Length: 218
Image 1 (spheres, one colour):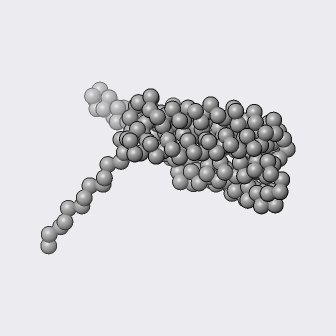
Image 2 (tube, one colour; image 1 turned 30 degrees about the vertical axis):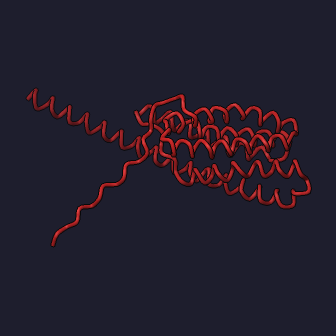
Image 3 (cartoon, helix red, strand yellow; image 1 turned 90 degrees about the horizontal axis):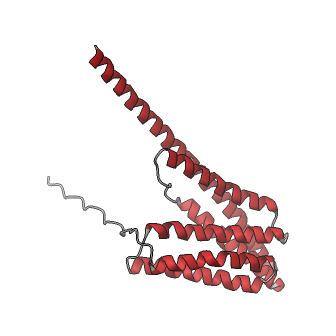
């Protein structure tokens, strides 16, 4: 019985070290819009803040399309894109907390998880590991939070919509915060597994060196 060869998996899109690309430029623009968005939210200019978030979302979609279609996926872009999303979430939740639209415990929940990820990144770097791959739960949590907070801003801009926007915004915010920490727990477990594996590997290597020395000395 002859065996059919298993086709090799298709290679993924190439990721380059280029810096000057159109998607990266759009990501830089998104980063520059974060303080603009925060100032508008703090000033109560909710309609203008919504326009900024719409422009940011459109540029986010556009830079992804351009990167894939014209083969402009870069390592820098993989850092800038999620950074812009998280900074927009942070700016929105802090601005709304200052205005007492959302409670400060929600700020603590979101910021606390990001601080934990930052510390995990430091631990991984000390063991010569790169950043962990993004889990789909993390993507889903970011998506929920990224749209939950602007929906709450929408209710501030148009009070007649609050009967609809507030329940939807809070549902997405609470679900997003839960998934945010669920993904964080998975990242913590992955980090601990890698660090323990690295420790066992280093211990085994040390034992082999010691055995080699003893056999040589003997």
